[in-house]
Amino acid sequence: MSDILVRMQPAINQQLARYGVQFGLYKNGEFHERLFPYDPVARQITAEDFQYLDRGLQQRVNALNAFLRDVYGEKKILADGVIPPDFVFAGKGYLTPCEGFVPPKGIYSHISGIDLVEGTDGNWYILEDNLRIPSGASYPLIARVLERRVAPDLFREGRIADNRNYGKLLEQVMNYVNTGGINVIYTPGRYNAAYFEHSYLAEKTGSVLAETGELVTHDGYVWYRGYEGEQRVGAIYRRIGDDYLDPLSFRSDSLIGIPGLMSVYRQGHVAVLNAPGNAAADDKGIYYFVPAMIRYYLGEEPILMNAPTYLLYYEKDRKYVMEHLENLVIKDVSEAGGYGVVFARDLTKEKLRELRQLLEREPRRFIAQEIIDFKDLPVLEDGEKVMRKADLRAFVLSGEDTVVWKSGLTRFSRTPDSFIVNSSQGGGFKDTWVLRQE
Image 1 (cartoon, rainbow, N blue to C red):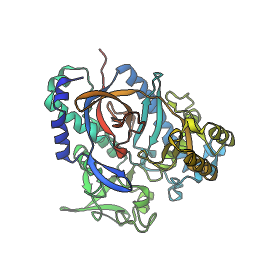
Image 2 (spheres, one colour):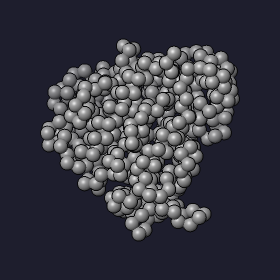
Image 3 (spheres, one colour):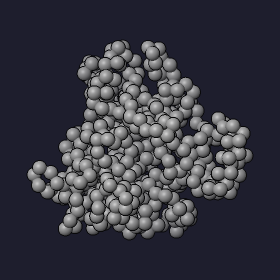
């Protein structure tokens, strides 16, 4: 633990507030923006541990990309009975407008945010695969910038891997899939809770930051309307969900989409990062099948483990869940950000009965998992060191190669004994130091 970072924590949080490093928080049905609080006690990952994570994360993301290419194409994994077809097609994230089309260079998930925890048994477990528009890379980036200002010798002389290359890695991915034109980061606008990240990554990648109305389609291409007139767009890193992306293909009431984008995209005249339709693999129900995907597409055994998971779609699993419900955590397959997560042990008898009825009525909507006892990390609270649950969001970038960024977003719970660490649920974050070999 660096004493100078501890002393400078208030000043660093003050700087983060000035930069607008905020996150949206939903509480009691209301939306609030608040500072995403920084903790100065960094998570440290040894070089040996990172090598292990690096191999496992590359393997997993390569398999997920192979699945997306297959499920929107030949559907071999479904025909071979590895995954039930009706289970895939019933998912909210499967988009029929994406069928029969392969994105530029065959890449679907360009930026994957894979959430892991380190169990008290010493094993790393994958909790979620975020393949839609995973956020959070900018927070350890800006935190490291501020840390280097107040403690330059710590990073100049220490064994901490430099994490400042994220912007360059993202730019390389965008350039690799670019179909001809400028790179654009497409944001819903400055009132979005993650606007800081959108603008920061635009700066770091040398991309144009575009809002609604600045991108238009005509003559088979996407164009950016700026001070220099219209410029053709070759790659769009979009920071809005599929539903709102193109009102002509998805939600007709979307006011933040680009009318006609999907037509241009299907003609191969623009790359969209991440690809529309990725939610077909982002679904927590599909998570259950990722180890089978790795074996099927790569012919390898999974390096990183899933949390023990039960699929209520299968009668055997559903029977087990009903018999052991109070020892399990239930997750809504379509939710994110810590929403739709229920620890059955915390429910009253009446609420537990209602949950059983809901699981019986809508088995496709939920998965059940064993509760992983994952490690606590030290956190400063009112000047005292306390232990809190923490996870790690690793960022994997897929372009010409699949690369795991030597950093990551470590989120921690600010509530004692809580397993929910998500920023949208009130959690904080700390820097992640990947250590170099001695």
